[in-house]
Length: 306
Image 1: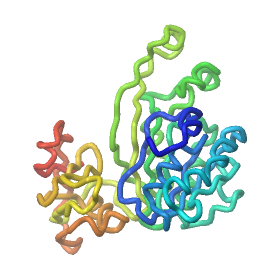
Image 2 (image 1 turned 120 degrees about the horizontal axis):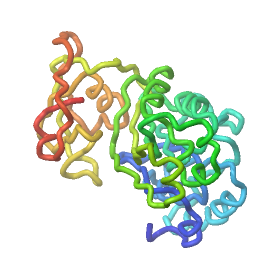
Image 3 (image 1 turned 180 degrees about the vertical axis):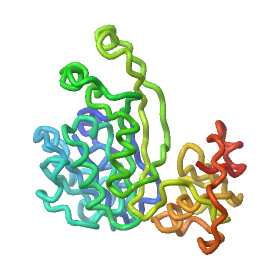
Image 4 (image 1 turned 135 degrees about the vertical axis):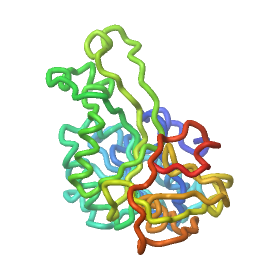
């Protein structure tokens, strides 16, 4: 953050920075990039040989982002900027020239809730992702469907609440798009501190959730094939442990029993060089013993899956 231009940081309106590890050399797409803060952070993380594409519909924000491309390239010691900004709709990435199977990672920072057609957005995400590619984004989710009149309320839309997806509808949507296993990387409750907002939508519980999903063939349940995974500790930002999601904490060097889906996520994605996965799917032992997700990192190292 200290390496970014002050105007880019000041004009950014996201919530947090949903950026996963293992980014060196990757092609990353940021949906709703705004002033480009996350794009420039990604620029530094992917390295000069990587590529970052930011998409936004707001011309004024993109003008801020584009204005500082050369400044950041010089700051990072790059001969040329590895960041490209495109003006367009996240519901139609084809219209701005983003090809099928061309992106390693798609990120977004509290933007998808603002789209009036989330199905098209997510369909486009899985179109442009390469096989084995990852969707990693943070957004607001609801514990029920928002009543229709409230979905168009300008105050609630401005607070990123009116467009919040009901989690189960989101799960079904991704399943229809061929992604039956979604993982929660982080989550925290959102309090409604404004009395006007609470009066309108106080019956709904909202969560800020960081989602991890992969473009790969997965099963709709966790199945047991007797597989064991061991994280090698080779990611500089994750020396002692790698957290795949809120119930898969891979302590460096410590074997962990995993279901078939988890084994595929870490062995057929860009994380593969950092894991040793033992076993294959030649022998099936039934459904994986899906005990409740552990509450602490030390418990998580013990071997529970989904």
